[in-house]
Length: 446
Picture 1: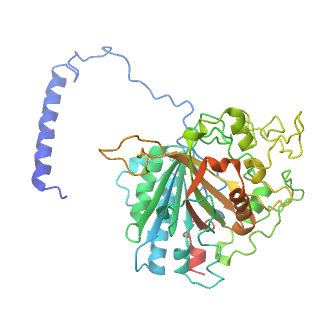
Picture 2: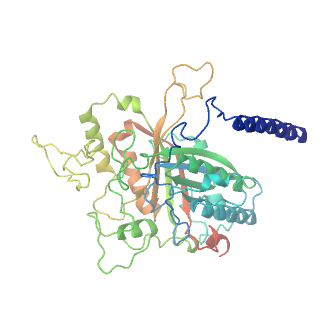
Picture 3: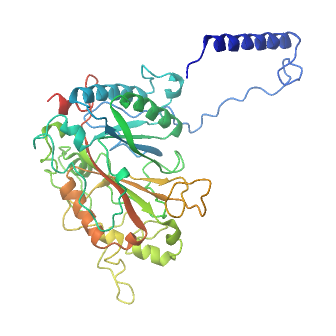
C-alpha cells in the first residue's frame, strides 16, 4: 500500500499543531501531565541499571570455522530452512550467499547492514551468531560428482520411531541464528530473510530456548523439558576431543588430554570433499516430547528410563553429573543400577571413541493445537501444547558417529515411549571465512 503525499502533508500539519500546543504549555509553565513544571518538582530521571548487562558481548564472525558451533550455546535460537526457487542457478546462489555473508558479518558485530531501515536495533548484538548449512540441492548447483556432492548429504534412513512431517524434513539452505537477546535475534532473522527473498522461500521455522541469559553460569548443561540434564557427555569446546570429533582436525598439542571415552581417531573428516575442509556435518532431529504422559510416570520410573538422576544428572551408578557411567554396577538385589535399555546406556558405545557427537540442543513449545493435531480455529476444543527438542547434532562424520548411535536408539530406548521424531534434515556446514570471502566460496569458486 502506498502512502499519498496528501496523507504525509496532513500528518505533518497535525504534528505541527501539536508542537505549537506543547510549546505554549511549556511557556505557561505546565508539564504534559497537568502539573506545574519547574526544577525540583519531581524525582530525577531514572538511570538504567547496567549491572549484569551482556548486550555488548560479541562473538567473532570471521575465522577458520563458522561461529555458532563451538560457541557456548546462547539462550535463544531460530532455525530457518529455505528452499531454492525454481530456476535458481549457481550464480544466483553466489549472489545470495554474498549478501548473507556481508549482512551476517555486520549484524553479529553490532553494525547495521546497508539495507537495514532500523539500524538502531543492532547496537547490542548479545553474542549473536549466524551459522549457515547447505542442503543437497544447493550443493548440486556447483556439481554432482563425488568430489563435490557427498552421498551422506541426503535424508537419513528411515527409523521405526519416526513419524516425520514432510514439511519439517526438507530444505536447501539452513540459517541457524542464535543469541542471548530474542529482540536482536528477531531483527537479524528479518534482515537475513530479505537477502534470500529473491532466491528462496521459507520451508520451515523452529524457535528454541534454553535458560535465560544470566540465570545460570555459562557452560551449565542444558535441561530439557523433561527436566533431564541433556548434553553431559559433550566434548568440551576448545578441546582436542572437540577438534577431532566435530571439525575432523587436530590441535597439534604435544600431550593432548582426552575424555574417559578414549582417543578419537584423527581421520573423521578424511571423506569430506575439499570444499568442506574446516566445516562439519549437522543432523537436525525435531523431537516431540509427550509431557502429558511423562507426568504420569513417577520419579523412579523416569530415572530408570534415562539412566541418570534427575536432580544432579549423575548416572545411577554415581553421584556427580560427570561421573563415568558404570554399566556393571549392581544394587543390593544384584540388579543393574543402569538398565541396558536406558537412554544413557543405548546412546554410548564404550568400545569405539569415534561414536561421539556434539549436541547443541534447544527446547521449544509451539502454539496450541487441537487434540487431533490441527491448527487452532474458532471451533477448536481441547487445546494441547506441543513441546519438544530441536536436537542439533554436529559431527565430522555422519555415518561413523551419528548413525550408529541413532540405530541403537531406534532398536531400543526406554525414552522412546515419550518422544517422537517429527522432523529430520541433514546439512553440510561449510568452513568459516576471512573478511574478503563469502560463505560457500570454497564450493562455488573452487
